[in-house]
Image 1 (cartoon, each protein chain N blue to C red):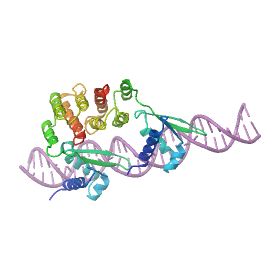
Image 2: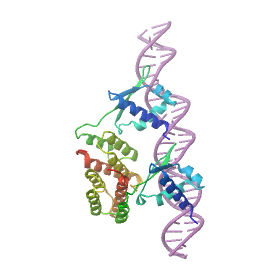
Image 3: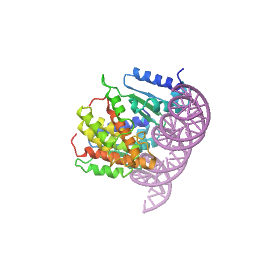
Image 4: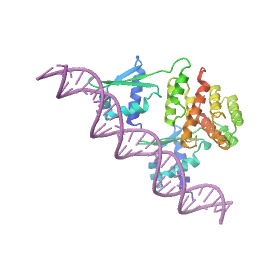
Length: 155
Length: 155
DNA sequence: TTAGTTAAGGTCAGTCAAAGTCAAAGTCTA
DNA sequence: TAGACTTTGACTTTGACTGACCTTAACTAA
């Protein structure tokens, strides 16, 4: 007896699989209508099952003609290094761990030298000026988002 | 799927690209006629998609024979463009301003499409989960750091 | 001259159409 | 039965579009 969230999840994943473009665009209200639920339930599903950690990227636009775009980061054949990375990072990452990860991505040629510099700069201690337990969490968020944004893409 | 504003934007950008002089002149009412919209919609498009952050300058003249001139101002070729960007950003940057700036860097070929994606992801609202006055400041910090990291370099 | 007319473009606040947020309430499950 | 997960809806934010009203410039006729 799956609940509505599971149904919506399955529905979206199926659509995504069938989509040749690698992403789908939905209208939140419309989808909610199909499943007879409140619109915010769609957000719940997205935020619990289509997160960066799961390898999805969500973009959206409000206002008239708004939409929600869901794309799956195509995990390259065989090695699902992304998932492993997420596991490695957890939800908190120190600067030195971040640097280590980036260096590894660089040496594996997953990212370019320039991209390395950009990402390193973004998660630098001196840039993320917030207090410590949160800084490492924020760093993890940013790092994951950046890596996910280009994972699975050609360099 | 694209709305009228997007169409007008695309139309103007295409004209601009094809123009040897680096600027185009249009008549607001005429353009509105072509797209079957009210004239003020042209202003809406200009003020949301052709801002200085995006690297455009709008000049116009009223009265008989009036016109609207749209010109694209390229970033300086030296390294001064960084300072210009800093000035535009100040110490607080909203998501939409950030996107505008990144789009400009992309169109000026200062950054690659991948780099664009990385930076956009890093400063996304959903990633920078802190309260609002500080979020925009943090975004400015991160954006500056990332851009600076690759500013002087060849692509 | 100069006042009036016409032909532009500008402004701004308001409406509507989305999507986002958050916390309270409900349900399940170990 | 506590804690995790789900569902709900009131409220917020953002974006697109519109129309009434304003300003400016050129032209024209007295």
